[in-house]
Amino acid sequence: MELNVYWTYFSKTQLQNIFLYHKEKVGIRVAKKLILGITQEVLILQNQLAVFQKE
Image (cartoon, rainbow, N blue to C red; front, top):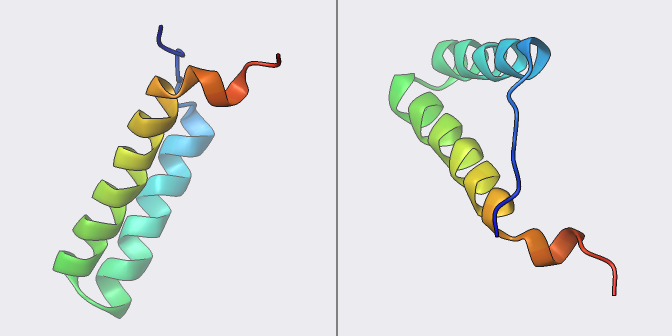
């Protein structure tokens, strides 16, 4: 079973802000890697429904 995860306008904007900040401060490679890591963690949470269920 899978949890539905919705990217709101706010979360998309914040993700973009994170990318732009790190792109300017440390470079595009690091910024892309960071954003990829964040989005992959969201996918992991999406598939870990058991974490959110109460027994």
